[in-house]
Picture 1 (cartoon, rainbow, N blue to C red):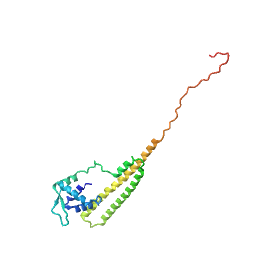
Picture 2 (cartoon, rainbow, N blue to C red):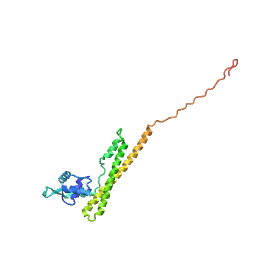
Picture 3 (cartoon, one colour):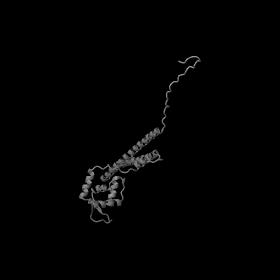
Picture 4 (cartoon, helix red, strand yellow):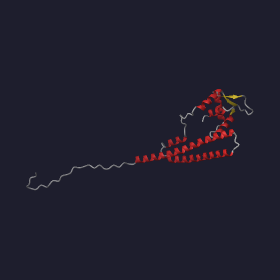
Length: 220
């Protein structure tokens, strides 16, 4: 997730200081991708260096400095909203790497690795489903919810849906991997079996018996 564009998107709603940006980011994403204040201020420093944000006035009583978008920053975030997210660069996935290596390393029980991971992913999926159910229940019981809180809750449900779909897809993929392992095992077993060939029968010419010679007779 690009912290840069996350902060620019928040600053498009008005000036904020680092801790406020962190709190808003986590409130709108349900804390799924937590940020630390140091990371926020480091990113703000880069954005200021690149001319995308600027500080607003002096620090307050607590030493906090607010930032706002520059015109260049507004153009940058506007272009981000319009452009699709680049999916051409595949991020590293530890599970995919783990299984890809497992099938090439001798002595690894790959089927057990798959089954262990599936059980963990199913538990994670169940936890996410409970969270979504709780979010829907809380929303139904809170008729006095403010517009801002309602928007944040909606954003959190979108994030939850994405996580649920990803977990479901992972379970299906693990099922596919297990079936693929079974096919490979059957193929390897068939290849390893010795082939039995029928003995080749060679025809031999018939032998002709000769009559015993009688003394005093001429053999024709």
